[in-house]
Length: 270
Image (cartoon, rainbow, N blue to C red):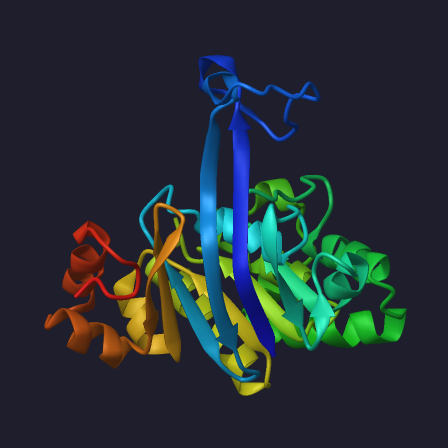
């Protein structure tokens, strides 16, 4: 089970609008001279049960990727925490990484390696034995329709092929919890369909899935619950039906826009 409790992340704004994670060491007593802070995530909380998919929604810049990077232990929270099966992301990040798979939109492939070599490499990094790696590559290659390019160099692959390799690399150690950051962005209809089917299979196998997307039809198709954040704060939590009912909208994209553009207290935007 995933439990997210009041997660917060802020960055100090340096001169010219650049970000810096490290505050100045000198103590400044006058608040007028304190460095400005950018609050990327403002106290987000939610839970996700095994065998369910949580849709993480929000406009660009809402804080979704920062939130997911904290859950993956790539970023340390400023405040709050989260736990996977009782394992705290702040107190025991290495153990969390053993149970977690994180598909980031910014992680590239090694162009001179084949998908088979790439996935094998990451499997060994996770301590998976060779026989299990071979078995899992065969299974994921079949499910993700990768057989035709499994032994081609990665720099010759299309965007959809590379995304499938990234997903297989993310799941080679058979994690209990999987985080997908906009996995279908830039894919054609066929590749996106394969990826969505595979995400659904992860849920059916009892994995906890956090799924970020801008496509409302994907939310309606896959997600058991939705967490919508805007300007770093949670604006809605509930099911797709709850989202439509709360906003009195017929379509999800309309409900999304209404929640995002409504000012006031998070979770009570309707």
